Length: 208
Image 1 (tube, one colour):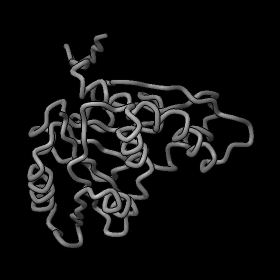
Image 2 (cartoon, one colour):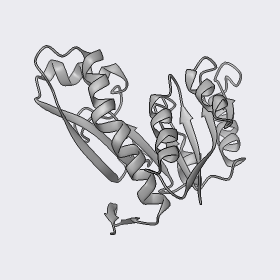
Image 3 (cartoon, helix red, strand yellow):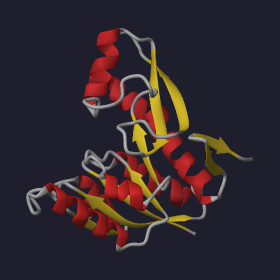
Image 4 (cartoon, helix red, strand yellow):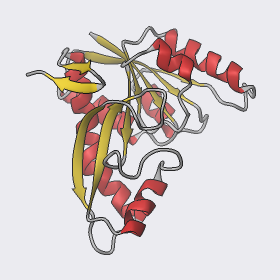
């Protein structure tokens, strides 16, 4: 059984997609041990509590020193002994000490087709604003392992989504979630939970 800690910052729609996928059997051999947020008001914490999942919050307001915050955040995650850390709408920059503690065991969902519209400054609606301002016709989402860089780790899965005339950032964000994020994140977790993912020379290999 793959034990997961899911890290969140907001409403928790990706968290809900993961919980639903566990319930309906899309994700097998995995369970969520805890949900950890950097935002006390994140509705994701309520979603977790409603499912009987441990929910904790570690905020910079409570731990202002960055190095100390990074240490407390890591200790909070380690307390649940996860096999996999899932970043599901988590806006915290994952510290190097956590990346080092969980090599190729942290995954993130990014709402664009990496390497486009990713890296520093591209998060949340800013990604979709960038897509629309550039006039691209196809966007999507990417699940990748987390390394020391920003959106630079090995890519696990990607799914394309059409950009439609008249899209607003909010409309496009919703379509990318529904047509890509909520599909490929559960699929990636299921592949990892069933030992079908390996990283070779910095690239992901998926076995049947």
